[in-house]
Figure 1 (cartoon, rainbow, N blue to C red):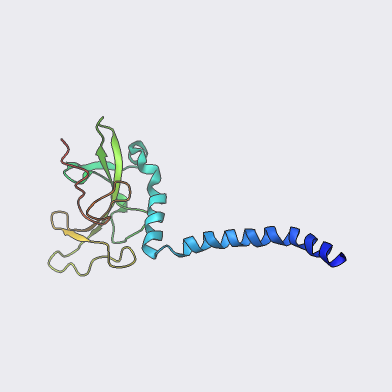
Figure 2: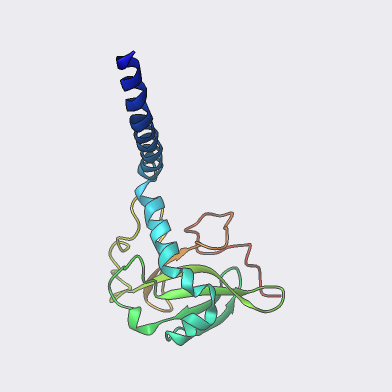
Length: 170
């Protein structure tokens, strides 16, 4: 009887600890199952979430450098960020598209890395982990560019340069 009472007493203390550790390991396994690319996208989303308000972007010095570009939106540029370096959490450009009421909605980011010699641009910048990112050369601006549709879903893919969901601005 004494052993049964002691066993019951021990189970009362041990069982919650076991259940808690099982619950924690499930959360850890969920995080472990994210790919490096998914982790980077989550980091980018967290770093740029504050820009859902275009006023925050303009207060930091971003300005509309393009006007509306069909299937992209307005390109808000922060010139001091335009350099030879890809910084995951600091894109050079934020993309906004007006909603049906004309209110600017944050839809994507764009990285812009200058190219010194367009005749010999070299390889695309090292960006996101893996080979899914689609860097393109913009010969008019002498830049490598990469769009990342982190807010507005893009049926053509997260790294596609254009997004038909943005429309033509009309």
